[in-house]
Amino acid sequence: MLLVAGVRSRFKDVDSLVAFLKKQPFAAQAFDADSVFRELLVFAHYHAIKAFGEGTNRARSLPAEMLLWAAGTSKIDRALERVGVRHPSQAVIAADCSEQEGKELLRQLGERDDSLLELTPAKADRLLAGVDKSLRERYSVEELLLERAAMLSAQA
Image (cartoon, rainbow, N blue to C red; front, top):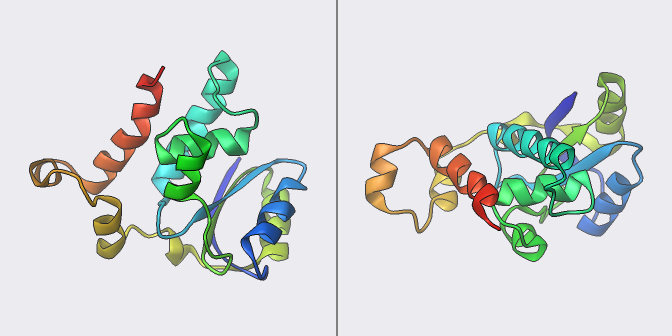
């Protein structure tokens, strides 16, 4: 099961949050709440699993592969710049875990706040900065952002 949740984490810094997630017995990745939305992370998870199944993965771990797909790049540094968690108090967590593991993970992380997952107009404007106006008029925000993520499959 894929858990996607907004979290106001109890961790004081990003490094502590990331270290905690790495210790989990399942794949879990933190993202910047201002850079992602639910559908993008579902898309990234699906393609990361598929890449590992087909042997086309670019990263060594499922969490890192999800990060690459969410960012639409094959470069981990670039992915961290685009979608990496910046503030543990405003994080989005994607975890490939059981329902019970997900509940326990959220309990340990802090307060769940799924409003962080919403694709607000302000978030959409930030994420679409630099996108041609004619494309923004023809396609939905979600379509444009998912297309950017899908471009990873075209990178050789």
